[in-house]
Image (cartoon, rainbow, N blue to C red; front, side, top):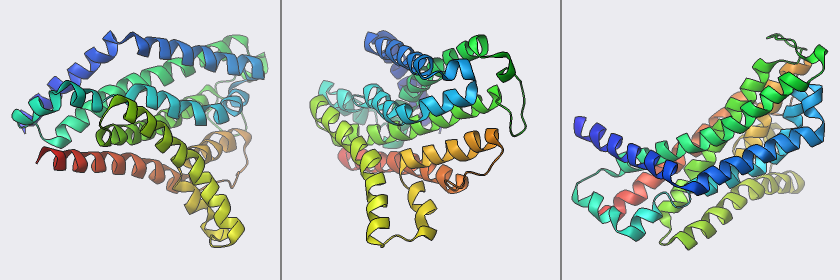
Length: 274
């Protein structure tokens, strides 16, 4: 276990150093922060309060977060393959789960910093520019609250980490960075857009019932994220039950995609090392 811990620490530190040295990630962060602030400013949510800002940001973030996950993670494993470093790691008998966990953890730090940074900047702007009646620090229902915006930030990060797990899996499968980028973009689009389309088709063709709708939505990452935001942020702030999703099943859906993607990545990489 101590050897695995040492290997994990070394790989994790290497990933963090890679992130810090790669200027593209800084440009991605600045672009995301500017876009998030612009969305709130142009939508009027910044002047109205935290809840209107959440409503302004929800749909764009459903699309933006997967794009950030692709930018951060698509080269995570395939870059080592192209440089021949995977063969070196195999010679040091680094277990596949240690390698995947370290790679994912390092990229997760970068992704979380980008998402949290942009949303925290937005929260500060709302606190400064919102009208006085929205600046109430409350934790009960029916009142706009920075606590609820903090919950929105946490859910957005969870959604981002889930999509990053899928991108890391794609990076394990790919054989070149160009292929990794194409597969990551295609896979994310298929999961995000295709999942919603499949649920709608199921309801239309009646092989999905209304009773199974919540469970079906929970299996699609962006629908699960959307449902969690509606149920635990928008619904709480408005003081009414939205009835849009089952929060528990949606949370399990996101965690399931994350854990499943990483476990599959470990399995595939382990087979490659044999």
